[in-house]
Length: 154
Image (cartoon, rainbow, N blue to C red; front, side, top):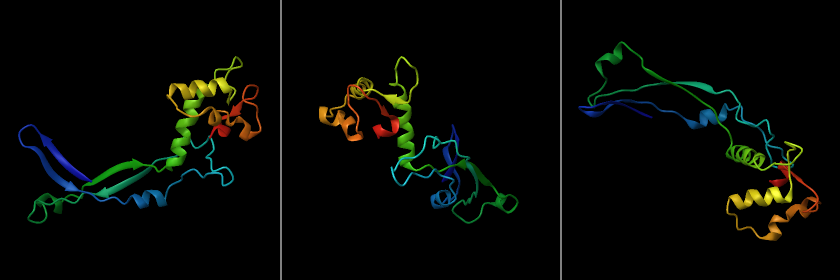
């Protein structure tokens, strides 16, 4: 991480650098766990986990050793971060996207009919075959009559 002091006269002046190990963030993460049977993350994996605060020392130099003010001060960069597995983030996106197409007369049912699924795929300009879209049968359901849960659509 590089810190620059920007001004209109001299543009970007190098202030210092700070190092951060992403492995530390991942190792200490309170990340959601996926179900081993289905490979899916639960709906509670919505990114609401607490961010961890990091304090990283800022190391500055002017090319000739330490900067004079460094003897008096110990500058640090403070930031907050959290780790969320990519699969959980992707599933969270698709859950939210699919909810937009759950337009039954009964309200938010958490299930999608064949028409709702086709509407969602059409909005994405999907080129999936009819066989793939009719994957309701893979879940033991009939495309025209039954509905899929959000988890079943994954």
